[in-house]
Image: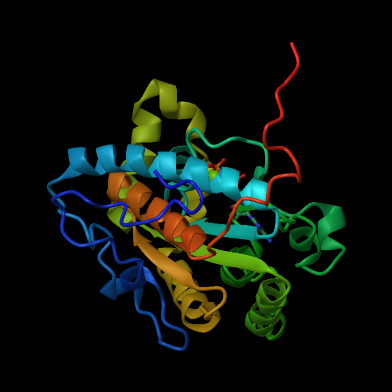
Length: 289
Ligand code: ATP
Ligand code: MG
């Protein structure tokens, strides 16, 4: 495999053409209606071929591993992956599966919970900005500044006049990061209300999943439509050329994983990174015994 720029279709098998991530991308300025996005769809993949999908993820994971090493060695690019979903949408599972085997050096997951008092005493981007990736780093935001136009909006945590201005701030903030050398990908793991019910019920029914059940998750569930509306507005307004949103149908976990992985791989490949030139005069050096 060409490790300088691991490339080429990662789907050389019988499942049709190269996975077209563009189909999942939200085109800037185009209004999004989530009801039009089937949560069980598997664009670019045969829905019956789950086993092939799992096999494919293994191949993708090797490529991701190489690309991340290249990212680190190259040391010039900064990668930010933003993950958002309703509860039980699969953020943790996606991170676990897509980054399996990746060298933890240079990769960081940042989970944004309810803001602390100190965080609330600052503007909402203050706690976010300090975690953005530096050179050679890949940072995954598990929730993000988008909570500030999601839960904050639905729960009226600040007045509408205040959160309404945030879409523009966020666009500008992300554009600044992009202009300064950060590559941004934003993934919405899109599940159905019924799939969420099933997953939450499983957490109650299966003793080894009980620890995952948070009764607090029932509150956003009871406001499902308001959250979908809030998602629709942010998807419609904040998907830009330099910081695009992708809507990943996420009811089928195996598809969600290959889709997220593919978006990451193709984005990294697009950077055409190379390894740094070797130090001068190393040819012929023999390490002494
Ligand atoms: P898991 O449940 O898998 O551990 P999680 O992301 O759901 O992961 P929790 O601690 O359960 O983590 O939830 C974090 C909570 O913090 C969510 O309810 C989210 O909406 C809330 N939150 C995140 N950012 C903000 C914010 N800026 N303002 C208010 N609430 C926020
Ligand atoms: Mg939770």
